Image (tube, rainbow, N blue to C red; front, side, top):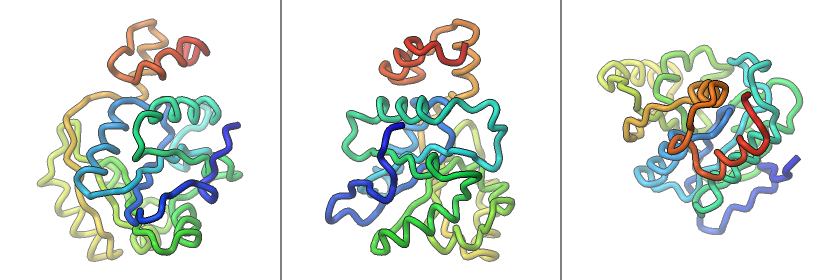
Length: 214
């Protein structure tokens, strides 16, 4: 296991705007990286922490690759970007790890930092089904990535509703429409199709070397 837990993560002095990007990253791909890069640029984030989930509450864990592989692929993907880092905090926690608990722990450890939680804009539609949306809204600003043909006009009423009900501060990240998903990559690998230009070269080599998703 690669040891880099959030409680020991290296955050440089002067960095006050931190993005946390959760997900299974099964595997990480250029779509994830584009969202993180655009979040940094548009909201002046000093750092984005990629935080792979151990036992995500909304997914079938049987389909998720083991944590070591997912974390190693993230580290390979972000190695050349000084604004990106990763944490195994949720992986090391036993059982289901809810977002509000992760944010509570982060704010306890780093109370002076303003936290931005990065997710896909489609997640706003079911944000109320998450555990403690009120607490998530209190602890962070949500940055929702608009991509894959999502209509911003349809998202604005959801944004307003969440703000009125929970005090949710949600802003939208504009990203290039790069249509790729982890599921598509896994299927292409299984079918022995190319994933070049969908994931970083180092991630592609890692998948081939370890015979993942076959």
